[in-house]
Image (cartoon, rainbow, N blue to C red; front, side, top):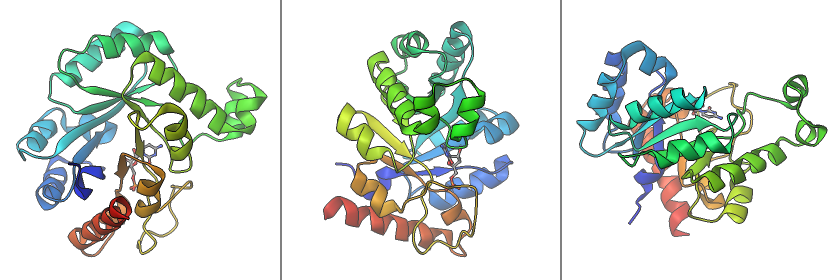
Length: 241
Ligand code: C5P
């Protein structure tokens, strides 16, 4: 059965191997998966994935947000999945055909999560990019369009903000996974930062998130393990209520 820690993804948003390993050692008993993003992967390469695998417990979320011609993405995905990665991310922009070909050519069973619309984009950006008014005026419409596309293509789920979780779950079903970043516990010490569409761990799980990504509230805490335990307490409360 899924316990509280299995809902928690900690992003290793640090520039060096040594710092990443320090967090892996510190938090390996407290989180379900470690997320490796572009910065760390470009800096240190696959050896960081080995370090996570060696914990023997935590899963790997390789968040490289692939976006290129189908042949390149397919081969990059195969290379990623050969490292024992549990989840990886692919942009929706290349269309359903690409998503489907990635999902179908998957000997290692790595799950594909689709990136719908980056949370850094606003209506005006979409307008500049030539999107229809209905999406410029309501980005959720575009998120839903792409989430439907991802499901039809056979993806395991999507990454989306806490404000969209309920909608995705209600329409696409409880088995279609939702990973939610932008989590800020009410007690978090993180001041004003770049996350805008935020909710608490408790709210996110209540709304149906399968995983929450919590980075800075843990990294910025004086005592990261205690902060992690508080997050786990909120998750526990949400799943047992
Ligand atoms: O909790 P914190 O804001 O530090 O988490 C940041 C992490 O969440 C980063 O690794 C970032 O890539 C990820 N993320 C995000 N917004 C998205 C998708 C992922 O902040 N829409």
